[in-house]
Length: 225
Image 1 (cartoon, rainbow, N blue to C red):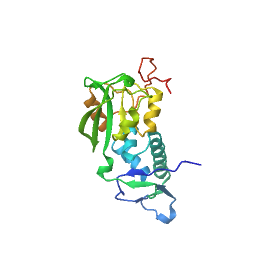
Image 2: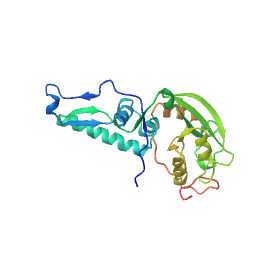
Image 3: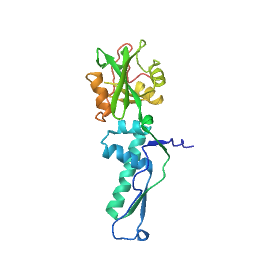
Image 4: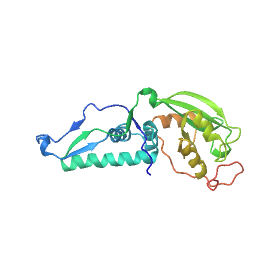
């Protein structure tokens, strides 16, 4: 049985819900229907210029799901423009999101104010609250047991409201565990934690896919399960 589709967060209805080529009666045109979540994906990715990881968080979906939505939307728009079709905007499994629903929290493994490159053995995270593409609050969150895939870090951070994890390298096990708790991993991040958080909030960071493969004690490694 296929999994039910969860509601996607969208900002609201567009000002115009129908478009067509000039000079041709609508009754003579084939119509393409763009759903509200497809329109929202184009707004976030192409108008605001967000990377897919950041846009996915704003819509409350995984990066893979966002990628499928925006690819479908772009094909529909191209079809209407290239082939002279009308386009209407309607439908979709969506939830209208006010500003508050777009607030979320990110976590960054921290060592002396910098992104800790050893995710699995880090001793704490800096948590940042993001609102309207800006960092509005930060606090330190200790992780005395480390953050490897066998720790309770993912569960604890999820309960604290974290939806995004900015890190250097992460093992595949930790990536899977974070994702299972609704936390989007973004790897390949370095430098001061505040600067990393601000870059993410502004939509300037993307997941590098970098995987840790070291076998350090307490480290989060790709072969852990």
